[in-house]
Image (cartoon, rainbow, N blue to C red; front, side, top):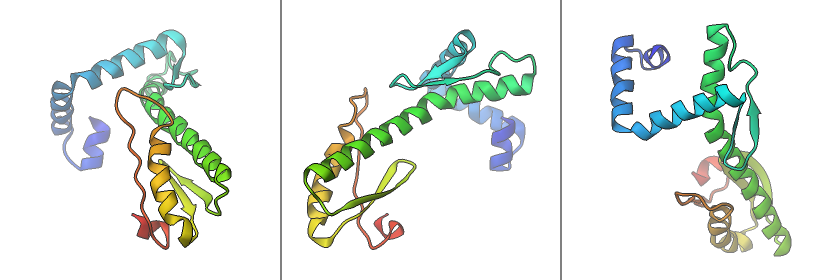
Amino acid sequence: AFGLAQQLKIDRSAAARYIELYFARYPGVKAFMDRTREAAHERGYVETLFGRRLYLPEINASNQARRQYAERTAINAPMQGTATDLIKLAMIAVQGWLDTERMQARLILQVHDELVLEVPSGEVAAVKRALPPLMAGVAKLAVPLLAEVGEGANWDEAH
């Protein structure tokens, strides 16, 4: 509540009510957070969906601030780490396709969950057609992955 109050510039009690209402509406989120926090305390680490581990040496620290920081990290890491794993798999798939098809397009940058390519005009249609299913198909999850293509002279225009 303290952090949310600071971010939204509201009083702490209003932020606490907001969080309470959120968890009432989405009890699965609270259950996930609780399970993840408990598992981190027991094992000393958390994992992405692909099994990559983040060790949390401060998860059982006697210092409350250090322990709470490790708990917040434990809750965020599985989701953020899984997103990282997915974009890495997408990069490998895209580069493999570019190589196999002998495309002149080049994968030049990754920004969070986006890949930026430099594509000759003659290859734009093929890249736009191939990349969404290629990227969305790097993993099968309980929810479908979605990949979209933007086009422009630069990254800003492609949005």
